[in-house]
Amino acid sequence: MIKAQMKILTKRVVALDTIEMNLQNDYISKHALPGQFLHIQVGNYTLRRPVSIADCNRETGTVTILFRVSGKGTNELATYDSGKMLDVLGPIGNGYPINLESPSTVLLVGGGIGIPPLYYLGKTLKEKGINVLSVLGYQGKEHVFLEQEFLELGKSIIVTNDGTYGEKGFVTDFLDRIGLYDCYYSCGPIPMLKAVSAKLKDKQGYISLEERMGCGVGACFACVIPTKEGTGYKKICKDGPVFKAEEVLL
Image 1 (cartoon, helix red, strand yellow):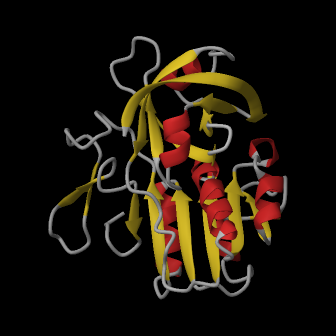
Image 2 (tube, rainbow, N blue to C red; image 1 turned 90 degrees about the vertical axis):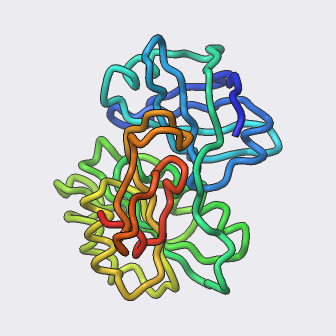
């Protein structure tokens, strides 16, 4: 992890209240792993905003992030334009394990703003020769993003809560329809992660937790989660944000 200045190269709206930014930094683009995040200073707010890494290009030295405008901090971040310099800590956290023992096919299960980090993961796994399946959930048609990018990785099912696009329902309704797979990776709201983990309890799985944070580096206890073994708490920023599905109590 380093403290760095990252220049905004491009910014665009990709869905309702969802912004994509391409940022420049050679070190972070070369060292970031799927599942890690950036901790971004926004204006004069005391707390930084954690934003997952959606993609990296090591050749161009660029990092892509996507975030949803959902509060004062992200609302201000969304006003920043190309050329603006961001004060960033990153890459932070433990990412998804990508050197598992001989998986030939993996399933990605994402919900809402938990979908972006799964794209960088899926792209990395595909480059390793692993087949990638995806089930992605959104609120409605106007919230859908990265659809084509995931289709290029492999078979994908798009699900919307209201049925205005793709299939109607929840991601858990389609986990048995996507095909056969060896293990799964998931990111999204905790109720979704809880449902996915329960349905796929017999599968090896890894989940990434979305959480507001304090320091982002494990020095405080603002983002803790209990372990299933009752052995204490894990810090989402330092011990996670990725955990084995059976490791933490949702």
